[in-house]
Image (cartoon, rainbow, N blue to C red; front, top):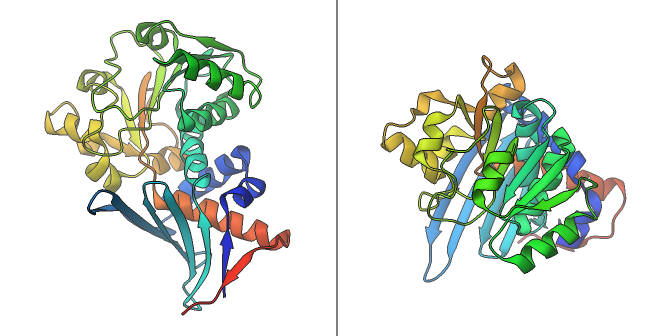
Length: 312
């Protein structure tokens, strides 16, 4: 029998603070060679695209398959020893939670000391998780929000003010949010660069979330070239999916050998004293495995009533 865990149930079983802690541990396990992963692969159908990726952890001997088509989004966990499917859970909430938490881990290690301003470009669904994670990771004094839609900005700030106690302020322009941010998060679906780096502070962390396909772009090659350190969650995934990094390397504004995996930072510390840092997030199955394993264990520990299905 395999269990079914709904999106609503996953919300009851894990929060952002826990997720940041889990991913911090997961990146250490990656550095120790405890995880194997297959980067995201895509298959185009008639109108929608299937995205799949997988990971295995030697300590649990669990294997995860993350798959999604549009809003249909699941994490499946398999027991490799027994050769059975343990659980299928909705990733509607978990995928966004772990994406936010990955930025939180990056901010923990890469943000300037005591950042005053967290800037956000893109006050949408994923932006809520980004803000919560960075606030919990490095406690900025203010969140500066930029978005083109005034109603969406207002709704975003109203909702997030109930989640974090940090004061919010609306940025009047891209120039304002770029020039004032100590940590700048860009969370959009843009296909053209939004930030070129001309107005960035001398000490800053820029985190990009949306450029996880080669057709997507959030920062310019000029910005990337100006960085002292470029970090990503997984090099193999970045080579396939990271629109900004792929383009910068093709134009010789960056070399792949200079891009540092986040697990190296978490395990060994920050090399040198970089002042300008870029973190490019793609979303990786190792993260899905970490949060999925925790959610399953919590559901069993709390004896949560779950649906079951027979394998066939």
